Amino acid sequence: MKLLTFGIILLFIVIFIQAVFIWIKNKELAVLEEVHKELLFAHRSKVVKHGKAFEQLFPYMNSYPYDPKNFRFLGSPIDGISFENDELVFVEFKTGKSQLNAKQKKIRDLINSKKVKWKEIREK
Image 1 (cartoon, helix red, strand yellow):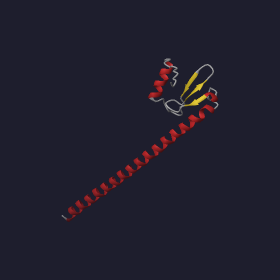
Image 2 (cartoon, helix red, strand yellow):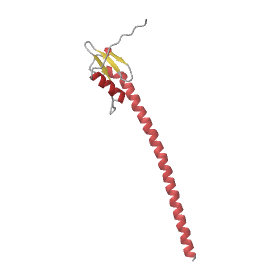
Image 3 (cartoon, helix red, strand yellow):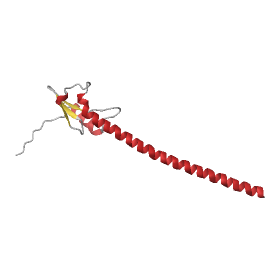
């Protein structure tokens, strides 16, 4: 009888220790997940900042096919326009795996379908 009681108490102690161990592991996992989220946010922020800085410098790189003096930075929704002798070139710079957003794709499609106008507006 005493052996059975001791066995039951030992079983409860083992179950309790396992429950505490699982609780600690879950807490550690939650902390690690939070740290991961913070690191991911910081990484994405740095990628965006790198892209923004790169946009300003790209016209002065050797790979830029136009005269950098003809480029005018807009920033959003497209990076800029290069005013060349015989054409206007709408320019969007991308780095890494970045993609055009929906608005940029719409602008690209409007330009490619020649739905571009000139409008002069005067104040009366």
